[in-house]
Amino acid sequence: MMEKILVIGCSGQIGSELTLELRKIYGNNNVIATDIRPASAEITGAGPFEILDVLDASKLQLILEHEKITQIYHLAAILSGNAEKRPLASWDINMRSLMNVLESARELKLKKVFWPSSIAVFGPTTPRFDTPQKTVMEPNTVYGISKLAGERWIEYYFNKYGVETRSVRYPGLISYKTEAGGGTTDYAVEIFYEAIKHKKYECFLGPDSALPMMFMPDAIKATIDVMEAGSSKLSLHSSYNIAGISFTPKELADEIKKHIPDFEITYKPDFRQAIADSWPARINDEVAKKDWGLNYKYDLAKMTEVMLREVRKKFA
Ligand code: NAD
Ligand code: AKB
Image 1 (cartoon, rainbow, N blue to C red):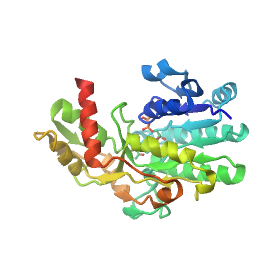
Image 2: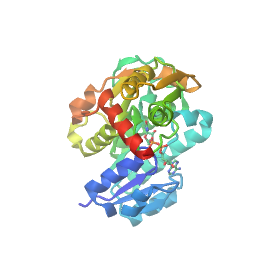
Image 3: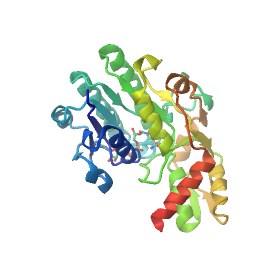
Image 4: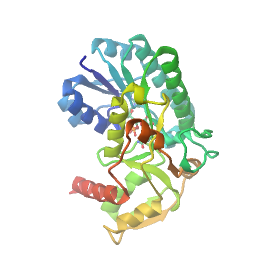
């Protein structure tokens, strides 16, 4: 059967790249891109795009039926930093959007859903190093609470109704195509722009805040791999830890200095420091490796080299 994909949140940091990758696999016209805001010319020029507020359950249902959608990639959410500024509105968006997607998937018997969780599901009582797949989870941010609740709901819909949602706990994602969307790990994107533009960066986290991170090409590959894995391979139906590379702001700055020797970093931690302090420094992703063969191409040095090259091109 031909797959027809709906991407919700195609204009964001992940959606802007994942949509293009999905179109390479399934064909331009079989990937319907949607977002509450306009999309890039790269997306609108190559295939179908529609404005969709995913909180509008009837419009969502209409598109799914009209386009005969078989799979949804649901990427719309309010990320950790922005969610702390508007807790109730963010809870509403993060949870109601997921419930709309799960209910539609149940009613229309869709084949599969992708919905990302995050390292934000962990909290200050979680072991910070080599964080296991299954461990203490007491998140203390509204974003983390919504992701943990989402994980419980996707597993519930699988067990109760057979709705198959595939999910990974993304670390902080680093990319150069689209701005990062209001998260705590965004310093690791901003730093490259400031390094190229001004040779200096004031970091909103302290020098030693180690966090799990991942370069976008590895994240896109993990997303597609978990979606394509055979059902019999999956030992869990909540969300898989994926670890990527862990580093501190100081370690990233030192790596950038190898390319821009006069680059300077200063530190002025803000409210996001407490969020970073509540998250793991490094997580364990053995289960994803064993179940569906998670693997990575980029380490800190390789990622830094590509980021500097690509951001430089943008300003050239
Ligand atoms: P982003 O903020 O860059 O993009 C989200 C997109 O969703 C935006 O384009 C926004 O316009 C859209 N959106 C917001 N509300 C909407 C609504 N009501 N209806 C339709 N669209 C709406 O976020 P991202 O970084 O691309 O993240 C995508 C997903 O991955 C989110 O679920 C996020 O929690 C998760 N995630 C991201 C990271 C990361 O580092 N980027 C890490 C862990 C998890
Ligand atoms: C954020 O910082 O909110 C995101 C995430 C790790 O979920 N990048």
